Length: 114
Length: 116
Image 1 (cartoon, helix red, strand yellow):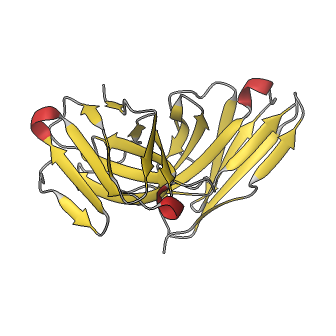
Image 2: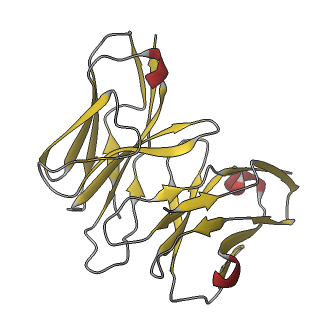
């Protein structure tokens, strides 16, 4: 069975501070994909990044960075926070084979204070 | 850009009514999914479909049915709405994955359903 755990339910940070959203996953498969999605107050889930299990290279995109560590089964997401665009709920998700649905964590609500 | 649209952003229905939630995608995706989202429970899969006229139960199919008569459209049906089906409903689509690794799912804006 697959499982995604996002232990942080809610986080508040001050603008321009770095914040890390934790994601820990469980799977017995050696081949899998991990995802991060963002859900702003409007409700739509916005795709942010996909990483496959063969690629442990960390990624940086502007104010966002992702740290994938198979040794600890973690795929953490760090943001240099900006209030208007970053206050949202963030979901980590996992799929282990071609066309199966995603397994989601319960999400972390990030509030950025100006 | 991938576009997934849902027929309503907000919907209010009465207990016992039959409710149809429509989802349309314009990217010729084979896979389509219906999730519901509740506070503290995250996203839970209701049904999904790999192709026209095909459907698979997800984690919480009870009280729901689906219809996929055309590739671009995936409907979620509440045969007799109940108050515990008050929720946010999210539709998603993805292309068919060739091989073992999954494709990205793209989501619609969601429908907030209130059952009175």
